[in-house]
Image (cartoon, rainbow, N blue to C red):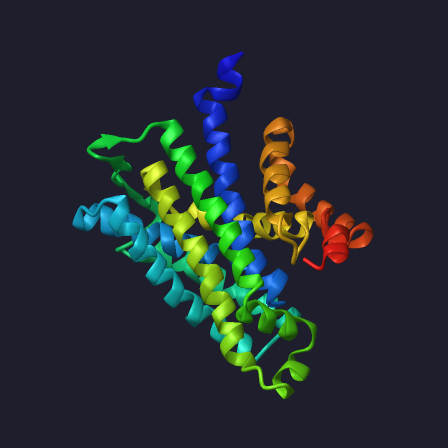
Length: 289
């Protein structure tokens, strides 16, 4: 009975839930608070994972060095990927970010430095004081990263940057008239969101000790968007609720694995029709959060 809740399988699920909370929370900053529709969020996850994997295998860096490196590279990638948001918006921005996500996956699949279709293996495991972390250690790190992401996104949402992002989300033109530099804040939203996703990618790379382009496809990006939407875009705990539901429910319904993306699509359609603000959308309206 204890293995059911504290065994390796349960801890692996906890790790994946925490990683997905981080990804959904970071996407919530871009789409929920910033109003920038992004279907290519997986690109930041991939950039962080490959940065950590390359530095670990080629230079022998530990996780504690590859993590800040992945954060810096992901931030820079966020600036580059966020730049198109200055010229397009709404549906067109969604298509552009979708294309950028596919570009990153295509580069990972074809470049020599990323291992091409074979990926990168033998990424160093995470160690603390010379001892390699076990399932409990990895799960604790992932939960810590998820908690830190939700806390920092909450702090950003309550700061001057968050106020500017909310103003842009509601009416970009009106925000610009009031003196808000909409271009700078739009790109900043992508950069900050990408930073958290890149950190999750670095942690995943060292946990799995292997990365390949298969983990960063369109399905992964749609899953992140579904988690954020189902939980409630622009809400504090929506990414947590969405990530827990859409990580655990498919595990309980493994017989539907082949139709997972179909179910995700139907779920998004139903949510948009019946609960357009997500499961926690109504409470967010009441609390102003």
